[in-house]
Amino acid sequence: MKLRSIAGSDLKDTGDFLGSLGIDMRHSRRLLYWVYRKGIKSFGEINDIPAAVLHILSANAVPGLSAPIASEVSSDGSVRYLFSTADGQSHETVWLPDGKRSTVCVSVQSGCRMGCRFCATGRNGWGGDLSAGEIVNQVISIPHEVTHVVMMGMGEPGDNIDEAIRACRILTAEWGLAKGRSRVTVSTVGVTPSVKRLLEETECNITLSLHSPFPEERSEVIPAEKRWPFMETLDLLREYDNRRKRRFTVAYVMINGKNDSGRHLEELKHLFAGTGIRVNLLPYHPFEGDDLQSSGEDVMIKFKHELVISGIGASVRKSRGSDINAACGMLAANRRGRIVETDKIQD
Ligand code: SF4
Image (cartoon, rainbow, N blue to C red; front, side, top):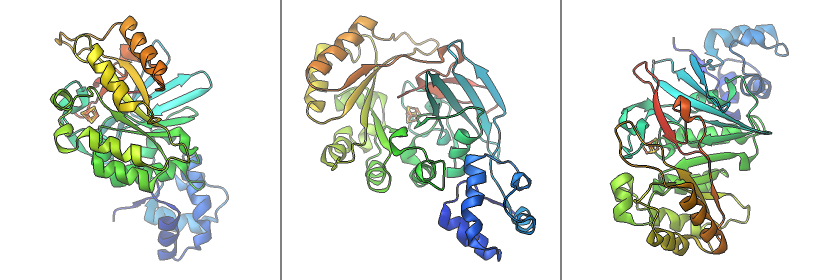
């Protein structure tokens, strides 16, 4: 008999499950507290639920959390963790300390199907979706306090949207990890129907990967542009009633001579002025054998300056963990047992 995983369950699922075992549903909150806040690996660690209840639970369920199987520390203090699912798929997680802020960048899939041209994850193929329990496990089972969570690791949240939304709820709910809604960010290439659901069903922040403001250039790098044009997704954000001030951001990885011209800058201003959407400018990390280079710092600062004086919130983000291939823009895992490079976008 396959044991049920409690990690990934919400309050109602848990209550229904306990009820089906003849257990008082009022134990649900304590059980979720021990799983989501205490990170237990065995029900035997629980000390405030009756032993008879734990005995029934142990025969029918598991907490569903698992520790990383490998880690690597960067010279800048960030740490890359490797996890493996019960069915042997691997995925990576990056922890990024920054003063009082401590961010974890989680994966939502093992690999990715989007095939973005400059992403190692996409090149490494797709191994399967992660469940909500496997997504939140990456926050719970690393040995650090976490203040912020970004879904910017391996995989496209829009391609695993049911589990990504469920994970957002667990991360923010008071019966879950109780992270503030402004501390959870979902990064997507802009799968339009999924972004619509994120807007309707969660209160998390949203980051869209742009690369180029011109559709024909963007589709060369992000094939998803052909199916879900960026402009359609952008319209959803523009039309959203943002009284609650969710943070919407565009990630723009800058490549020398490709997307850093005056023409690109003017189009960025045109698209984002007056929208309240921020633009994060990120350096590009070349692949091995790749002759493209990141734009220089001077160009990135000029872009930022011009955007800011046009009334657009903008920042230049540094990459972290590049010496351990955990840098901004490309996590590429290790589904086949080797840690490969990643260059994912970091908020
Ligand atoms: S950038 Fe994101 S969506 Fe594109 S291939 Fe990489 S992981 Fe997938």
